[in-house]
Image (tube, rainbow, N blue to C red):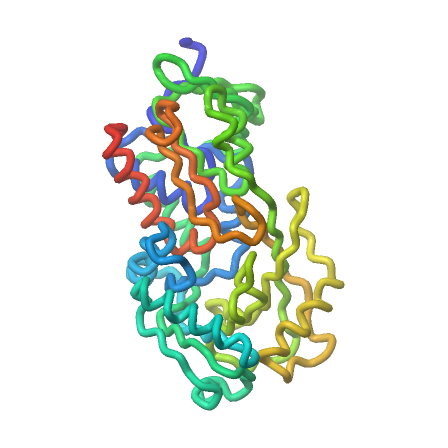
Amino acid sequence: MNDAYEVDTVIVGAGIVGVALARELASAGRDVLVIEREKRHGQHQSSRNSGVIHAGFYYPSGSLKARLCRGANRDLYRYAESRGIPHKKVGKLVVAANADEVVGLQRLAARGAECGGDGLEILDADQARRLEPQLSCFAAILSPSTGVIDPLAYLLSLRGEAEAAGASFAMSCRVVRGELGTAGWRLWLAAEEGMVQLECRLLLNCAGVEAPMLAACLEGYPADRVPPHYLAKGHFFTCTAPVPFNRLVYPVPGSVGLGVHLTLDVDGSAKFGPDVELVERMSYDVPPARAEGFYDAIRKFWPGLPNASLQPSYAGIRAKIGSVGASQDWVVDMPSDHGVGGLVNLFGIESPGMTCAVALAQEVSRRLRVESLL
C-alpha cells in the first residue's frame, strides 16, 4: 500500500463547516488534508445563502441546531469583530401577515423562549411600524441579535487560520470510492493529474449537499443508513427600487423553508429570497419568470413594492435530508452510531450551518475525543 499518499485526517468538502473543522483539528495538532471537488472553496451552500447570523429561535428545543446556535451567534460576532470581517447586527422582524398567522408567530416565540433566544419580543402592528414605517403586518417578533456577515470573508479567515495551523487543501479532487482496511481508509480520487490513491486514519464527510452520495460510495458503510435526501433550490432577486427597511424582514416560516424574506447585505443593499423549488439536479440558474411568485410574497409585508422592480440575482441549493416538509435536525453520524471505524458523516448541514460552523466543528471534535479518535 506504499503507492498511496498517507495523511492522518481527511475532510471531504471545503465549505464553511469543513474548513472550520480543519481549523479545529489542525489547531489540536492533527495532520489534516481537505479535499474539494471544486477549484475554489465555498462554491455551494457557503456562498449561496442569505449571509444571516441567526439567533437560533426557529429550531426545536433540544435539537443540535438549537443547542449550538445561541452561543454560536454571540461567538460569531466576537470572531468577526476581532478579525475585521464585515458584519452588522441589524436585527430581524418575523411578521404575521394576518390574524391566522399570529398563532404560528406565538409558537415561534415560545420555541425561542425555550431555546433562550436573546431579547425576543412580540410586537403589535403599531409597534412594528414604529420600527419600520413601510411594514405591513398584524404582529411581529423582534430578534435584535440577528445580523448579517460577508460569508466568503468569514470562510477565507477560517481557511487562513486552518492553513496557519498546518492544514492542507487539495482542490479539484473528487472522491470516487473509499475502502476500509486494517490501517484505515483508502480513497480513490479523480484529480486533474489523473487517479490518485490516498490513505487516512480518519475520514470526515463534510460534503454538504453531496454528503449522502459520498457515504453511499464508501464500501462497508451500511446502505440503509444513507438518509433520504432531496435538493431544495432557492432563488434570490434584487430590487431596482429603493428598499425602505433597516432590518431583515421574514414571514412566518413554512414547512420546507423560512419563506421569501428581505435580507440586507453588509453594504446595505437588499435582496429577496429564497423561494423553494424541488429539483432533480444541481443548477444555479435564476429564471426571470420566478419573480412572478415573489411579488405576492413580498407585498404581504411591503405593499409598496413597485411593479417590474425585481431582477435575478443568484440561487442556492440546500442540503435537505428526511421527508419533504418534515423538521429535520443535523445528523453527526459517528463510528459508534454506524459501526464503521474512522468515519464521521455530517448529513443535512443546512441553515444555520454558517452561523454554527465553528460550534459544530467543536462539537465534532468533542465527539471524536469521546470515542478516543483524537
